[in-house]
Image (cartoon, one colour):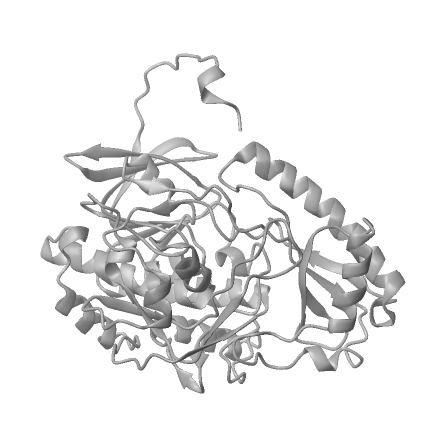
Length: 451
């Protein structure tokens, strides 16, 4: 990123930005958290606008091809319900999701997920604005009164009473002057891709369900790739995690990784270029080294590299590792999580030491509220959490559940004149239960550790 201290500057002419609409709630970012947040807010009676930079919704699940979506169940019990489960059932009915896996790691077809999410948004009365980038906010008395966007119509504004920041990078929070942090070392990014022409019968042994939160990996493929990596012939990689993709001969692969900062456009551009080159080279390696991939061909790659982490808000509460492994009965629980504490290394082909969870933990609403916020709340991976806590809570199913809590909170704030920093937890809990969310907080701590 260009060093701002050494930058030269231009002076822009004063501008008057037209206001194109007024809404109760504006959701910035149409990823898994944003989709659910928008639906929840609209169902709660809020006039809701969803702003999305692509021409479809789904975020990492659709633009970056991240599957399966983790995770809805643990220990044989459902811990995420409500609108996230409704969306997954809609996708399954359309033929694009497998919900039979007891682990709750549910594969999705990215094209079907786009359709299922879009249908539910339309049915809930959400106004959608695609091909539009968030640009700035107008703040008055500490509250965001307008969200400014940029698209082919130019620079325009939309009035709002509440804002849900589902950008993943805390874009709205930072623009509003609310506090954020970013770790010096971030989890690496991954470019997912899908292959056709694969001998999926020969790979059947890696398509099983996750066990104790760990997805199966072909040790023979991994061992050979590790040898090639040590010889400098294969780039940094993880896994590989190989998933059957809804028909014989097709797989979805999570293998590439590279250190980057997706909030630094220049660095992330270099990452996109680098990983796309490495993807094609790695596919050639798979064809050459492994008979299962001899006839493989590239069906699709993510239109963007998958991002795990950038900015975090400084929230009213920071979710910690202890909160994950020793679940707390928070009065403001709005979601549950159960994903393994899973931190990908930026400089190694190895994973960290896992902490495998046998029971779900609770995510408090305060983790989504920036300190000093009047009418801004977040949902998704920019929540307030320490490193190990984030290593678990960042996954998409939990982000969806957070989205439902944030969306309901926004609608309650509009209806009852509350700020995000003083939302009535009893009202929030009641509304979540009415929307079939699972938020009981009488968890029994139970974890196991495994290298």
